[in-house]
Length: 206
Image 1 (tube, rainbow, N blue to C red):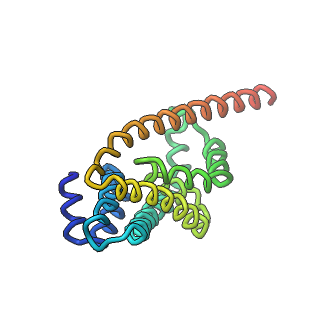
Image 2: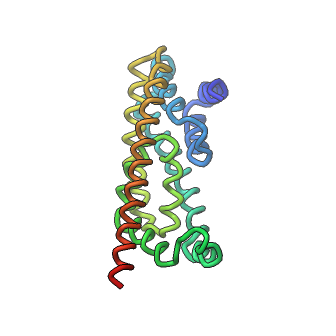
Image 3: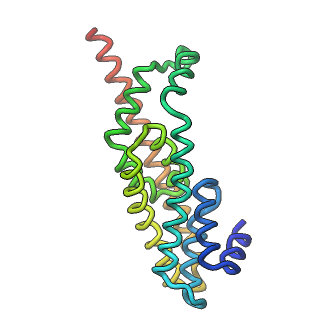
């Protein structure tokens, strides 16, 4: 896959970078770190510039994010309620739980979108729950642009600095990804533990 990505980018320049990043957001298994660091390297031997690559890559990421946000809007809370109503007994989830989770995302989701845009794989998928919770589209765009731009500036700049050794950053990104996933997993476990503990206390008080 890496060879195909590099070939498209070398052949089509800015347009290739835009298409690859937009596709990466819709199809997360495509590694953004390859696109961005190689895009930075391309600025050392083509007429591409670091600011140009960052702008085009950010535009592609936002375009892909908007598509997944739209998917999230189709998977709205009302449809999830129908699933919970049918299977909630097995899943041990109620409509109230669903609404509490939605309320939480509405309260903290903007910062979640911002920080998750800098985590591989999750950076794309975070747009779906944002759409599901009907997050204000303008604020979704704002936090998506900020988080995406920061991520792009760092990786494109590293690619430009490392030059022909651009692919060395991929080894570091593997370590970073594992640490980020572990942190997210721990956060989810702690949240679930806190949520059910709070639920049990409220049930006991009733």
